[in-house]
Image (cartoon, rainbow, N blue to C red):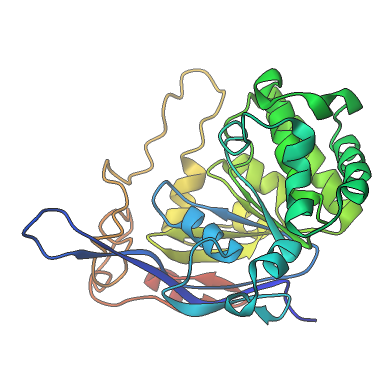
Length: 316
């Protein structure tokens, strides 16, 4: 069975100037990512800010061209599709529902816009909009309201309805609950899970919230400095992490136990910098288990049984 999404050694490289008389430097936002997502599954992508997960999402959506490599959707090259064909197959749900919705348009027009872009007549689009609003739990009277008249959870439901109204096979959710209250997050996650089952959707779910990703995903990839450093089935990855960075991410989760304070995972204060990728293992400057050879030898492409683990220690 062909993959719903297949990414083959995809790269996104920017050239950035830091001064008027300085040469542009190379920023490798995504640096050789390969993955396969089976139809009807939810594939989670996690990593700290700047690791490249949102850039990868926009490449999969076709919003950013790849610098090299290839992306296939349902067996077809993304680069060979026109905008309408791509929009019929794959749709986004963005992080902030307020900024992603036109504040001057009523809900009915916002949700119906993808249908209009596909050339579907208004007489046919109107009932489809009402049906999709009902599916996401919004009352019929919402159709005439503006986004400013809705709560954060209602706005995100509108964004989900807009994404699903053209009946895509794939939805890419980029931090879809991070701008919402915790109680509303649970409602939106349950809604996405129900819609995924009802509509047989394939979902890419990007988040920094590990608990959310564990709850919704069948498989998880951990990104660091533009690469996937570990990938495995959700249960195996969360209960038996093998890459030091994955272990550090899991250890960094705050617990409600009094007196424990903020966990120290040994990564230091430095963050990721895609314009200054170190030689050897790109994680070695922050790795609490760094050893001889990590600063010279690259673990790229290494596997451990059925999982990806780009770590020299695990390979040994």
